[in-house]
Amino acid sequence: MDPLETLKKIGWDKRKLGLERIRNICLKLDNPQDKLKIIHVAGTNGKGSTCAFLNQILIESGFKVGLFTSPYLHEVYEQFQVDNVAISKERFNQLFDTVFSKRADESVFEILTAIALLYFLEEKVDYAIIETGMGGRLDSTNIVNPILTIITNVSLDHTEYLGTTIKQIAEEKAAIIKKEIPCITGAQAEALEVIKQHCSSKGSKLMVIKDANNMTKEFELSLKGEFQKMNAALAIKAADQILNLSYDSSYNDKSKKSKKKIIQDALKNTKWPGRFQKVDDLIIDCAHNPAGLRVILKEMPDDIPIVFGVLKDKPIKEMAALIQDKTSRIILTRPNAPRSMQPYELSKFFNEKIIIAEDPKTAVKIARKTFTGSILVVGSCYLAKEFL
Image (cartoon, rainbow, N blue to C red; front, side):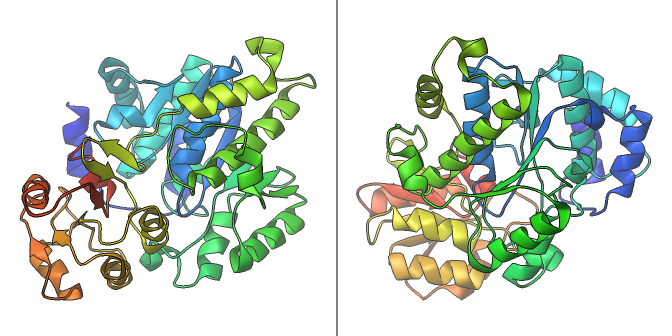
């Protein structure tokens, strides 16, 4: 039984919300989630970057760290990392067999979540950083009992599952907050009020990042873009909180480095592909919703050529408007994913001046022949992975 073929048959894109199935399979695995020190991360954008920054800070502090994120850019194995090393194919297959033997009707993401928890337990990690797949309340990762929760921000995305207003989506994400467990957030306005209410009702300490620029001004960030300062600030604050929870002394007990040196090295050494990443003349970013697109476009010069491809379930009308406000040099294409929108269908959201390319690589070839300078590739992680 080939695990990847089996997962393909189950359906990579078939979502099942709810915790009953993941609880059942983890019970059969002797509840690995209850034996780990977990940091649980939710939010609309910036989850992956925040996880990556925090992961690197904890590693530089001398700890063994597990990291579970989604989606993957190259291979599924990169979703499961210990100290920045992806799980081997052989180990993944072994754990898949163990988990799958306990399966009832769990979804792909539920199976992957169970594999991650079992892997980190077997590896005896000091900390496990777990990113939600979608939302929070009914996301399979929400069976964990974390030592800390992080909610990066809240904007409209996955509205068919999470709600059509900021308040509704914030309620879903704030549901990862556990009784008397601290929470750190970069959320603002209406979303922040929802998070405050959840923390208050559960007796959980809330820490709000208000000045990310000041918190990161002394450090060089390997991940480019002004928006990464908030993600780095969340990670710095989380590291402070986590290490205070684990022992009373300073960072350097295990690493033999000062706190400032640890953060300095970690923020400079963090790698997280597909986020404002430059590859030759391409600028590649996974921004896949209006909020993410808005922040990356802020970093771009006016009228930059843009190669855009997107999945059908995104707020395409709003994303198209943002792109057309920025540039008239637009090439539409199709990410290599089952839910992607065909470029001709996508063109209905744009004016008549756009160029259509059937596949991403053709789109870039056309962009290079037609325009000069840098080219932004954006709209989906599936599109980004074509070039990374």
